[in-house]
Length: 309
Image (cartoon, rainbow, N blue to C red; front, side, top):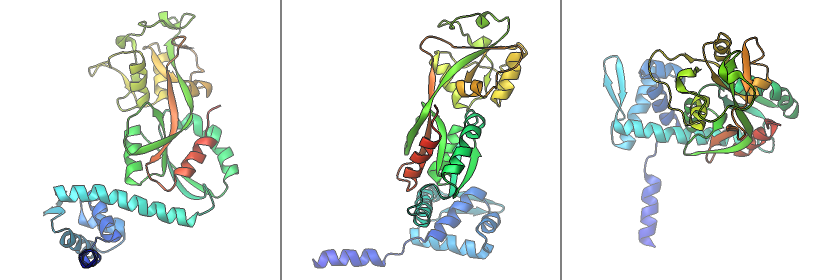
């Protein structure tokens, strides 16, 4: 008993980092500058520097390398930032959960959405969501899946609408619905004829695609076992709207999500939309959240409100 008591006493007496110190380090990692990090933290530069120095004393190791005009994280600092992001995210979750206890989907909710979903799903669903949850203050960020997942894990987002398949550890999800992947071809193109497109009919050299990083690009190519086109001469669009314009101009064949076609994206001269095969490829649209988030229940409610009919 005496030994157990001694261990407990020693643990209680140990200095631990404060949330403010962890926040200073996180901001320093983001801005790579003491002055810019201090400005973001709304404190003086000496105060932030002192907080980081105190953190280093507690950890017993340097967290940053200080050189003129440059700040670089040490190995210990990089690991501390990774863990600090999780601690700060969970703390913010705690505050939001306490403020909105018993009031689901109220207050601030930060939602990320991928670009191949946002302009087609949100305008149809958000008015009903606003009526159902009038106290909800929704902040929306449109970005590519890898960056949204990173923001989820860092606590910068509460949830994100993404498309599966996508492998991400530490993330849970709730289903919104399926979205068929369709082919779009120019009028007069051999693939614009009637009937489903036969397997093997799509060739890499015929395709114009979204730029690398868009999950729709990867999912469509994987569904048809097509190697991604290589070389700087391959056209890569930044948006589905640009893709449709290129197809209309007769520059090639591309892929479109069904929700975009339903929203009228392909309703323009020169574009023919076709199902690819009897067993059409689909992507699963989900609401994802960080594993262990206190807002998981709200993310599931959001998935229900955004469900694809």
